[in-house]
Every structure is written in C-alpha cells, then in structure tokens.
Image (cartoon, each protein chain N blue to C red):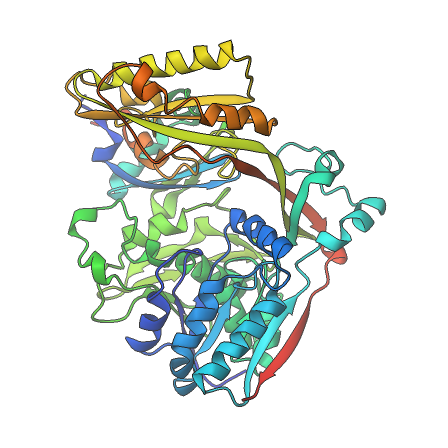
Length: 105
Length: 459
C-alpha cells in the first residue's frame, strides 16, 4: 500500500484562539475523506505535534464538507500575545499537519 | 424592514492593518448595500486600551476615520451603509472623529451615525466581582481576582441586535466596540428582512455568511492553500461579498473584474478557520451548526451555502479581558554558510551560559533557527542541510523582571564579535515589550446591557 504525505490528498488552514490552535483538514476529493477519518486520528495528530502541543488534541468530523477539524490545546507557548515563537498564532500548523503520512489503497 | 429580497454585504477589512484601499474598491467596483469592516483582533483591544490611557480621545481604529474621509462621497452618493467595529474601546470618540471627517469631506448634512455602547465592562469589574460574578478563565478555571490588579481591558462580545437597532433608527454608519465578528453581517440582514431573534435557522445562515466573509480575502483566494499557484491576480484580489436572501439563502462572491477566486475548496478553508466544535459555533445570537452546511459552485466565483442549522443562544456572553503579564524581548542574528544551523546552535549555547553567569533567570527562554525549523520545530522539520545558505538565530526571553529582560537585550549584539563566525546582526538592540495576556471569560447575559446612541452630522 503506498504511503503518501497528507499534502497529496488534502488541504488545510489553521488559526488560533488563545493558547489553542485549530486546523481544518479538507480532503481534495470526497472519496479520500474516509481515509482521513480512519487514519488521521486525534492520537496520531497529538503524536505528530508532540514538540509543539503540550495539551490534548480534539477531533471533529464534518462529513458534508469532507473535512476534519482539530483543536490542539496548549500549543502556542501561552497564546498569540504572550508567545515567543515565530508562529505565535499557529498560522503554519496547517502545513505541518500536511507533512503527516498515511496509507492509500 | 425594506423591500429588498437580497442584500449584498461586502467585507473590506479582516483585521486592523488590512488593505487601506479595499473599502474604497468594494464601494467603487460594483454594487453593494453594506460595507462591513472588522478591525478587532483579541490583541487589538489591549493596544487600544493603552492608547486611551495615554490620550483620552484615542482608543479606536484610526484607519477607519481616514477611510470615512476618503470614501465619504461614495458612502453618501451610493447610499451604502457602513458597519464597523472600529470603535475599539472608545466608540464615542470614534464617532466624533468620523463625523468630523464627513464634515471635512463636505457631504455631512443629515448623515446619521449609530454608536453601539455597553460592551466595555472595565468600570464595572469590581462591582461584578463583589456581586459574585467570578469571570473565571474559560481555559484554566481560575477566578479573575487572581489578576484583577493587572487588567487592562474587559469587553463583552455583543451581538447583532444593537446593530439592527441602529440601522432601524436610520444610521448610515454604525460604529461598535467589541462585538461578534459575524454580527457585523447578521445585523444588516436582521434589519432588512425583519428576521425574528428566535428564527434560529435564518440567524444561523446570517452568522455563517458573516463567518465566511469576516476575514477579508481568506474566502476569495487569499492565504488559500488549495491550488494556490493557479489563483489569478493576487495584486488585484477582490474582497468578499455575501449575497443574503430574505429566506436565508447565502452566496459568497466578489466583484467582476477583480482577481482572486471564489470556489468550494477556498470557502471550505474559511468556514473551518478559527472554529472549535463545528456543530456548536457559539455567538451571542445563535448556536450555528456548521456540520449541516452544503456548499456548491453556483457559477464563476460564486459559492452557495445552504443548510446551516441553528439552536437557541446560550444564557452567557463571552468577555474578552486583557492583562499585563511581565516583559519580553526577542533578538535576531543571521549565520551564513557553511554549517549555518550549527553555528546558530552554538551561539544559543554560549548565550544561555552567559545569561547563567550573570545570574539572570526568566520564565521562558526560547530559541529558533529561521531557515531550519522555526515554525515547526526539530521533530517535524528534520536536520538542516550543511549547505543551507543561511539560518537566523531568533532568541527571546519572557519574565516578570523588566531589568533582567533589559539586560538580556544587551547580550545579543556582542555575539557578533565574540561568538561563532560568518554572522551579521539584524535590527539593532531588541526592544523590551510589555506582555499582554488574554483572559476569556463568561458573563450571564442578564448582567449585560447595551444601548445605541445616534449622532446626526451637520456642516
């Protein structure tokens, strides 16, 4: 089974609320959505972002939009106005998620 | 209520700092009924509060006043209504400045400005705490009393009702302080169509329309990850327009002849932007369900949104509180080929040791290597190639002791001479900044009261 980066099968946008980052992950085609649901679990996302995200990861499903929404708690070093990070608002975290690899049939 | 079956609500400002030309272009490039401008990010309120503390007439988005002056004739002659949260922490001063700008432009007679008041609860904080409203931090659960002495601003997110009332009283320009971003769009729809405040499906539709356009071009091709290289004419990118129908139909579009692109993937990215649980998007007016939304392409640069479900709003309003929380400074040194990243790491090591020798301690010391791993960290970025042309060491500290942070800023430049080679020092000595932190809280709606003040402009 070929293993590809999420970049090949999805697009994404991320933003912030306080010390929490949200990442919307959208399948490039509807038939790819079940692969995202099956493989891009909250646990895997938490592991993927272990260096950046100190809290839990929540996942929500939007089947009509073929999309998932992730909340990465405590992931911005205290939040946009406090953080010492270059990406203090998690604007590039969407791309960081697209580095994750999944199996495609 | 007016007779129109569809209104065109155009957004021309996604944050304070967005394009100065967009509001004028939105009015001149095609027909619109409403121009909405969203100036207030979480951090903006505390900046405005500081400005007001220094100058009693300040505390609002000055860009807005300039825009009113430049666009006065368009607003009046085209009959466009402007709804903006430009009031910041001083909506009255903003309205006075806007009135003056209209007078100077010579188109003032009879123009009405509606000012929404009631979001600012800073003067009421002690009274609220005394009466047992704890304003606990929504994330940590701590009561506000812990940081009470350091609070800079406290503003309730108001909803669409005050905006609709101001329009109903004849306002051509509505100025609010803190309000829900989507309310800038929902307010006009409620006013035009007479939607009831318990018509949850329509309120949800108007809210989703507002969310889709509130971040400027993020729904017309800006900052869009999907197939970004094929998006046409970024230099002429059109800002978004929501066509809202009496029955709650919504189409996201932009003016013909502008650049950018409105398609389903792009609008989907924006719908997912800065949301939590998509089935429970909470605003002061309604809880909207994004999981029931259908999107379809409805012609070139037109995306139809339908199916948004709504539920009754909660009994609480969100409060955005900012408070001071120590100091920080961030400095930058750029290391060149070869082994740029290794040099930057060595410099960080040296700097940390010197801070130790000086006996300086901080709440946080954070180093990044721009060009190697700054945004995503080591684990995701992987090792830096030895031939990487350059890497910037970006190092910052945060702490309660201003003197320690100040001392840190004097330890960066010396590294250019007494550290690893092939280095250039960028940007002068770092500035010490006061850190303003954000405290989200809930307040019972019964504790919130708003009112609308009308101001008529005469020459």
